[in-house]
Amino acid sequence: MKSTLTIEKNVIKLGGYVGKSELNSQIISEKITPISKDSARETKVYNITNFMEVRIPKNNLNEFLQSLNQEIGFVISRNLEITDVTIEARINNIKTNTKKIDKNLNNSQEENLINKYKLNDLVQYATVTLDLVEKENIKQTIIPNTKNFTTYENSNFGYQIKTALYTGGNILQKIIIVILYIWPLCIYGLYG
Image (cartoon, rainbow, N blue to C red; front, side, top):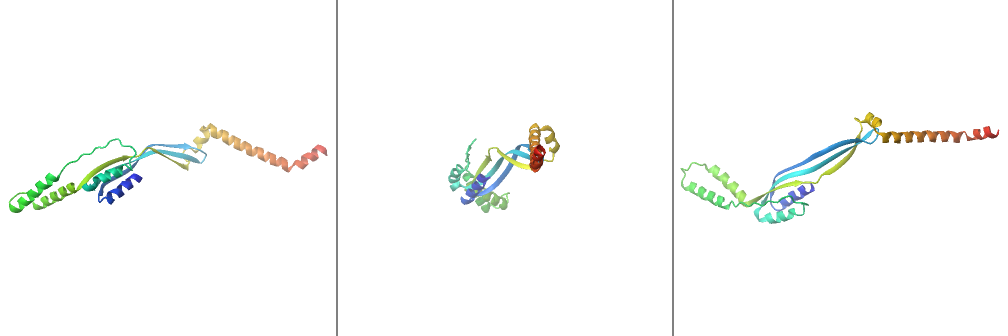
């Protein structure tokens, strides 16, 4: 997410624009583990991916590609393909000028104007496609234990031992307190 925001800022700073950005969190696995009578731990293993298509002014392409090095930890592959469309733009200009001279040609002027704008955009901007994948992350959250309430007590031996020690400790504590309250009677009974 942080890299996506930084890349988007760099694109705008260099005079480009983001054509597409598809950020997704993909849950790889999810598990709920009871940890007490009333709570459970939800563990999610997930990763974040982002597919981006950005347009960068051709004069700033190298600067943009170098700025990516700060945001990318590991590169799986890098493909750089350059298509020169300036020849197509010149041919389109010749066709447009020819149309002005010969008005009997079939194509409309609107279509030529649209093609001219498209080619001009292709000449002025480079398209960069990025596919970012983050390492797997783990998120743990404590949630109410509603599904496993009885299952936890019946199936978890460690929990039963913990409960028995706690309950037994409470009973022992109460017996000692009762003895402390009646100690004068115990001494009187022994010596009196």
